[in-house]
Image (tube, rainbow, N blue to C red; front, side, top):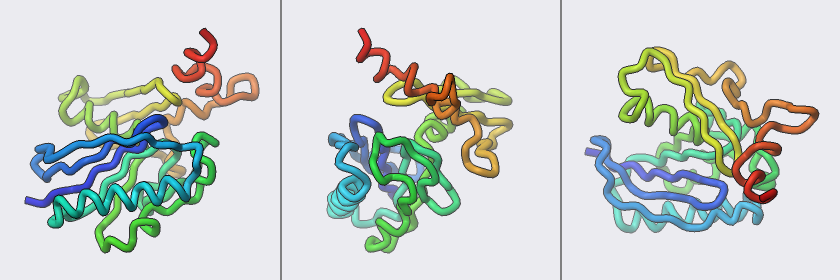
Length: 182
């Protein structure tokens, strides 16, 4: 039974740990994202997290990353991102973590949330599911008959980036924006 290092990069916190292929959580941790420090600082933090988890779980068979932005899941790279993480666009997570000689997979964080709901949450057993998240940003995911629909540009259902009066929807209506105006 292989263990997988799992890292969820959120706007405020990075949640990480090890999960085995049966879905059993081996350990979990959390650390501030410090996103404004930029992509270089964030990728160094990812290397530190990976070293930490490999010291405890040297049999890990891969690294799975969930992150904001438009993610080319075939290449584990960031195609588009807001300025929430300066320099994140263009980051190749496989290249950044190549020193560990482990397979690295990456997917948009809302797509991961949608897949989790479809596999074992409220959308389990549904023919199709539309999942949205509203937090630091706004994201969407659509699953049809067990298949995540990313689109040919990996941006299907990226509702947060939709323009509303010349501004991205999430820049007007995300929880982080609305709570700052109260």
